[in-house]
Length: 116
Length: 111
Image (tube, rainbow over all chains, first blue to last red; front, side, top):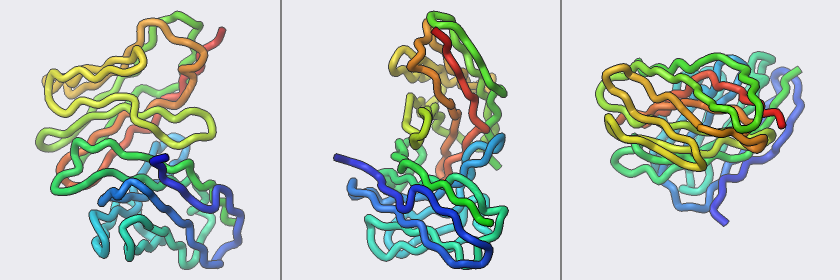
């Protein structure tokens, strides 16, 4: 089954404790992206990756890191989480290639993160 | 930069009522437009899309037409069901590898 998986689905942590949210897709997609969803703000893009070893900032990258060492995986790293990073996080992937403007993005189920 | 504005919710309807969710956008160039739907506890999934002016996207009884002259992409369904209760997001994508979303509209359909 074609899918995007995220782990963990729920996480409660404390300020400053490094964490990683994993994302994996089995569709051989080139493009992957991370979003955060907050009430009244919709989804905002954190980082995206056009292919292995190619990443770029989205609209809200501060406080986050990503890496793309393999095509299927795109982990999101919070080196020193703060309460304002409490949110619902989604990973997504799409076919990509030379242009992504017409692509359908496939979303993971989400990770609900609470930073105390 | 690109931006999407959609009508605020929540919207509450009775079954078989007509649904419209307004969406307008600001973008450079010729973006593609999307409607995504998020059912309770799930991730987003594509509902429909249109990639050029005057295109009509349709799926599951929902329709939206890409209107370049009014920079709009309003979502409509003629007769909603309880199963249509969800959050609906309008989004656009241009050739900069970014997808911009509206704030989302929560729709509740009552039996």
